[in-house]
Amino acid sequence: MDGRSATVDVRPRKVRWVCGIAAAAIFVVFAAVSTALTGKTEGGGVFHRSDQVAMIILGALIAAGIMAFARPRVRADEHGIRVRNIIGGYELPWEVVRAVRFSRHSPWASLELADDDEVTLMAIQAADKEYALDAVRALRRLLAAHGGATGQQPGA
Image 1: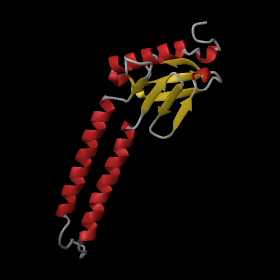
Image 2 (image 1 turned 90 degrees about the vertical axis):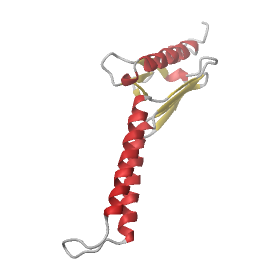
Image 3 (image 1 turned 45 degrees about the vertical axis):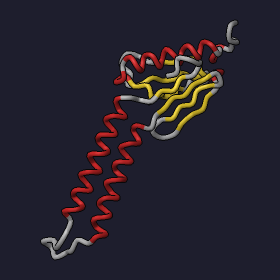
Image 4 (image 1 turned 180 degrees about the horizontal axis):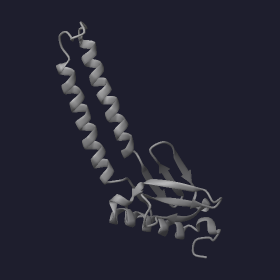
């Protein structure tokens, strides 16, 4: 979050660490297993260099899949809010946002929209505690400053 200007830029903290460590560990394990794939098998098959390369590629793909969970991000400024979740994203003007919600038992924050729809903010996770609360407060300040779905103009 940028306290110097009216912008908010949030990414999850703890999940990024966990995903990075898990992805690196998976890749290392698959790379190590690939070096052990040599010679003949009990069934008469033979491991080739292509099998080793395939195992490394498989490890890289699984690691990339794990890193997708670290993808969420929320960026907000005077023009609106941009939400990127694990799959998909949204770009919303403040006029359609009614409220920023973060209930006690929710795993992440959400936006309540004027049409009674809800958009999950996976970048703001309960596991991040104070960091997440600061992000929600900053988003609420921006929403209040720009009228939100109440239809009020800033300062009115």
